[in-house]
Image (cartoon, rainbow over all chains, first blue to last red; front, top):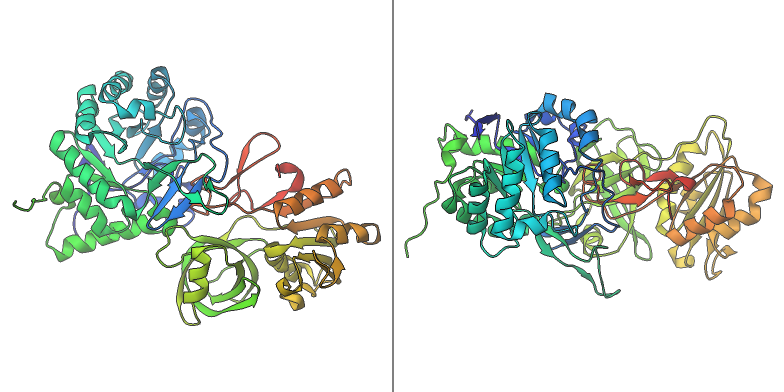
Length: 304
Length: 250
């Protein structure tokens, strides 16, 4: 049995596997299928100060190796989450509260409400599916710096994780901006903006026209970006993008990730996360790795 | 609700573009009429949500229409003996109250298949009157199963078989004669709208089963929502797929 625990910003996770925001609700539905206390943590559905209805349907489409989604941050609002779901989720596992906003004040307000109550606040500044879902904050390094600072000012106790968009000029520059703004760690990648067309109707399948691309097909892009970010910052990285098995998770850790998030794979197989955790243990045992955390950043580039 | 590896017993064409897939699940499962399953297909990332048509002692039959690459792959590659990744049973299903004796069933197109599960569940204890609509006679299938109730009217759009018209028209023609206590329905949205209009003000519960593109199938991802008349959203996979007709916008 390998030691799968990882330390992320002083918080101990029993393993590095966290279901990604938007694919796992607040955990209750998956808990009907397996005991979610086996997980390293859960990143919640994106929360906003006020309840949000989200986008019209269809909200999802599929292409080879990827899916596109445009849910549009439908959520009951942070107060309902605090009242109805937090205590239950906390009794199960580490809670990563994913938060989004339209304005700096939204981000400040929601962080202040969650400070000290959750294990991490994950700043969603990269939702591609709503006009003001934070993506405006997530593209340019100056605005990443500004929103990170604003969030950090309101988080006295809870570590801040800033989730970065891949739809940017330089992931290294943006990672550094988050670090400079006071992020305790970063997570990446959020989805890539894409489009899928129904050629019979000559219209996009998704009502929102564009959607966030995720799933196995985006993994090489995500691994490259995690590697580039890891070269640019000292703070820990939570890697994600197309992870479907333990070997995928290990790629991200070798590229520099301390922990990983698993999104789309939860749809393909509801047991994806527990299988990845089991697979990590097997791989470590087979390779004589005593602590999974030893894998972090062990990538060696080929000589030129 | 559980993840299982099922064994395909049969996967065959039963009508134009429609296949019937029967698989065996080696677990204790109870499937209510109107519930559905999510089936993993090859390398596709999203599972295909398909309504249960028949379920008995671990044998589950679902019927699906060839729509795109996923259903085509399912029909071509999953022969008897193949293993199938299935999540089941999902959704709320139909529910008929104790006192509701006369059950009218109104279906159209592939919407008839989840209704067959209701006919099978209630045919012994209730008076079941079925009205099933198809485009033409080549689309008609599983007539034997649809006939288990007290009566069956098959309607075709082109009149090539049975009643010439829609299932809703056939049902409304008989309405005063049968005076149902409850109506269960599934079919294309225009059909459900016609049913809603026809049943307006009759004061009889009408339950409809809806369809939507899904992500997780268990209520976590909020992809497959429908609009409710109270302005809120409901999850088709978890809060539905069966809703009281007045509860949802069609």
